[in-house]
Image (cartoon, rainbow over all chains, first blue to last red; front, side):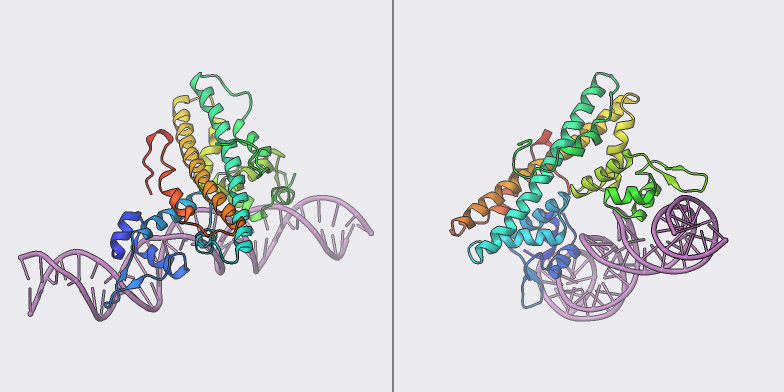
Length: 141
Length: 141
DNA sequence: CTTGACTCTATACCTAGGTACAGAGCCCAT
DNA sequence: ATGGGCTCTGTACCTAGGTATAGAGTCAAG
C-alpha cells in the first residue's frame, strides 16, 4: 500500500503521514527501489488510533508513549508497567471528568426538554469536585 | 479579586486570562476607576473548567459553546437543546474510546505484572471497533 | 513621597501540529 | 514513449493557543 492510499483510508493528509514518520510516531516505512514508501494495512489503524487519541486530549508525545507500550511488553517490564499505570490514571481522570460533564449536560437537556429554567448552572458546578479520584471508583461506564 | 490572584488560584498566567477575555471565553471583567479588572470568585472555577475541558480534547470554541449553554437555559430552548445533545454525543464517544483504552491498558498492566508476553497488541486492537455506538454517529475525521 | 509589586494596552514572539509549494523522479495506460 | 497522476525531499507557511516584552499608570507599606 502506498502513502496516498493509507492517507485516504485513515482520513489524513499525505504530509501528515510523513510528519508522523519524522516525529517517530510511525515506524520508518519500508521503501521500494524507487524510494516510494510501502505500508502494511496495520498502519491505517495506527494512524486512526493517533487521531482518536488526539481527540481525547493526548499530545503526540503522549501518544508516542502509548504506542511504544505495545512493543515493549516483556522486556524492561517494571518500567513499562509504571508508564502504563501512569497513563491509566490519566485516563481514569479524563473519564471521571467527562462523566461529570455528561451528567451536567443531561440535566441541562432535561431542563430544556420540559421548558423549565435551571436553578443554577450544572455545567461548571459538577466539574468542581468530581474529578480527582483516579481509582475506578466514581462513574463506571 | 484582581487578575493576579485569579491567575494564581486558577493555575494559569495573567496573559491567559486577558486572552480568554478577548476570545470571549470569559465575560468582560468589571473595571475599577484605575482600569484594573475586578473578578468574582466564580471566575476561578470557570477558568479551571476551561483548562480541564481542554485537557479532554475540546477546543476553545467548543468550550465557548459549553459555557454559553448555561446562560441560555430557557430562551431559544430547542436550539440550546440541540447543541447540548450534540455535545453530549461527543462526550459519549470520548468516554467510550477512553474506556476502550483503559481496558487495553489494564490488560497490558496485568501482562507486565506476571511477566508474560502479550499474544498481540491490545492497545490498538481495542480502539478499532469499540467507539462508534452512541446514537449511530459515524465518526468523521 | 518614594519604592517595589502590580496592572494596563499593544505588539511581538513562541510551540504544537500540521499544510502547502517547488522542483524532481516514478508509474502506467494509451 | 508520453502525459497525467502518483511520489520524493526540502523548505516555507499556517492556525490554535498561548507567552513575553515595552512603556506607562496604580497601589500601599515604610
